Length: 345
Image 1 (cartoon, rainbow, N blue to C red):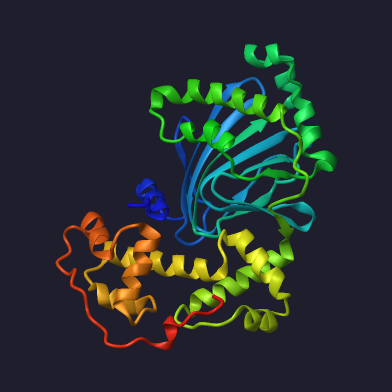
Image 2 (image 1 turned 90 degrees about the vertical axis):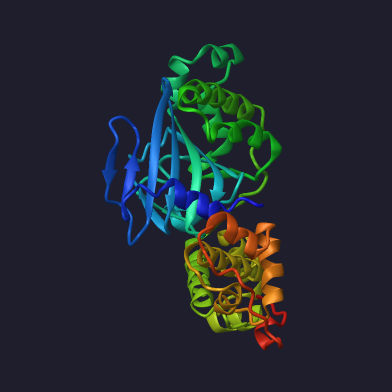
């Protein structure tokens, strides 16, 4: 079965009170930061002079991100699960999806807002003070003759952020950092941070400014997204949405995919299946009732789509996540409705 990332995040944060961020850095402390029922946890590690690493796990829509606007400092962020966006200065918003990496001066993201378009996120951020690191580098970096300030100048000329699209080399560096035993975290993080800096020192900056969009465009896309989610049973076309919101249809498709990681049709399908998965875990409704609730009158079609998303049928999903449920029956429907016809979303 394909891992249900949203459920994995929810499980990891079960012990965190709604509306709070749990900081696991010693001594652990709670901070009332989130709106509504959002929650999260963060843990930070000082690796060597001038370099620290933070692990952030979030369930929610947004999180304030405050730190001093340090022009000479660099922040490097890797997204593992979900999506994350920074509303930065100069009207730009930067979005990352699974496996993507961003590099930006810490002046860009000071007092910014982190957005989580899918409602969950997990990732690591490496904070680097080039001057401190250059004065006292660990042996591996000293032997390489790496100049930290050069990284900042290479990837972030004129103080602008940069990003790298997911690639095997980044997976090789970052994926081992997740789910490590407690005793191995600090030494492993220390080694991998050096590997990352050495890897980046061999790269040329990206030819194009990827993952960056005007904040006004992003805000409009969020409005369209909320409209679609408020009426999941309705089907409409890209052209109709574009005309209604006075936006170019091509721009609508491009920015929507950048923010939410999928085209509109795929995203809406994923949203419906996530809601179906929640109902399978938390209720005793029949499979047929759940199918209807998420907009599928034809139960066979619903089961096929659910299997496409989770690689398992709804009955098997319920057995694993809600074994106490007595209602796994399938309700048959004898007809299809217009809600199942193909459309642009």
